[in-house]
Image (tube, rainbow, N blue to C red; front, side, top):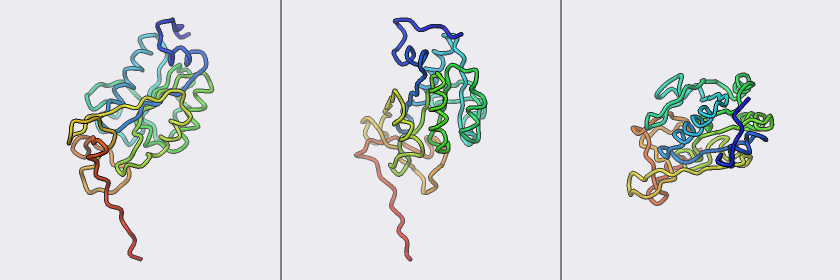
Length: 202
């Protein structure tokens, strides 16, 4: 049995304990999304809640067995290939953490809804926009169904202003390119340079 919440417990945690909920932490790269996810999951572990943590298999930048922030905060996790696998390993959990949700298939939305409807607290972190400045994968849908949405901001590498965009620094045009500071910078919208649109010659 999980430790009951008290009057000092944040509202999101009190409500999730009884009813289940979805919390989304989103923003551009280097804005502290994963660090905030780890912070919330650590709090749940300290409260003796049963926690399961997941990330997509393709995200192996820093570790295959841990969720790791760019600032090297880390927590043990399970890598899965598809969203439905999360359900297989979440039966006994009170709190479920999911990192890099933008890389999952669209089924991640139904998975999160199923878990929340079962009374579980689901905490999801992911990029809201891709390198083109467009909504990224299932993230808009997750934000729409979530009870709580936290938008994090980075520091623009050009101006020092709050940054909400991710600037790709390479010519690679693949939508999914897992990388770090060598491939990306955080930018304020005024300093963000969208990639040139490719037009068909036919």
